[in-house]
Length: 230
Image 1 (cartoon, helix red, strand yellow):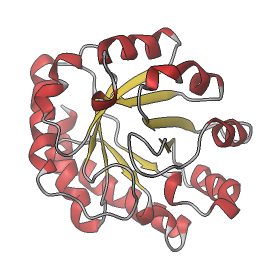
Image 2: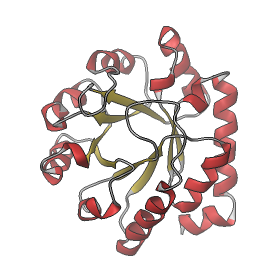
Image 3: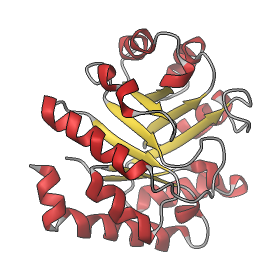
Image 4: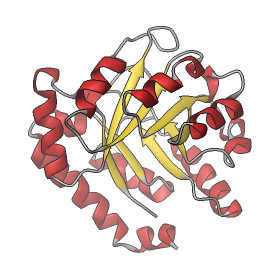
């Protein structure tokens, strides 16, 4: 199983965005998590295609685009055209999530599906055959800096059980409230892709990345990590 830190640029300093992304690359980061918000599906508005297109010109990172937008099928082609390597949509935002995931795959990029904290895992169980990744939101989507919701731990564990039962190559990504205290919790529950915004970008980015990646590696090297990697 591939364990990765996925820094979320939602918490970056946009006056220094290019510099901070280069720092991530120098520290061995592979994934860049990009949260797109429309002010409708979630209350906040973030950024869209122009920002992604701009940073794509200078970065070779894997662009992990998380669409927190209503009817995301309207924009899939445009996000692929501007540089997305993976597109995650919310099951709550799609009338026909299977069709949307197929639409994403047809354009040659990875497809993910996300669930809000209040959405039970059973709502996406039937989508595991179409998804490369499931993003479990561990805070309410739309705002950074929130506290991890402990009720989501069992959802991660339930999802990992379904994936292992069917032997599907599906990643579990978590987003929200990641700290030293919560990282081990989500890894032990079965997550392997860790989104972190404030934890990475508040303070010294390089030192933060080193610390978090070391913590992830400690888990991978432990009994818990080997158990999930089998």
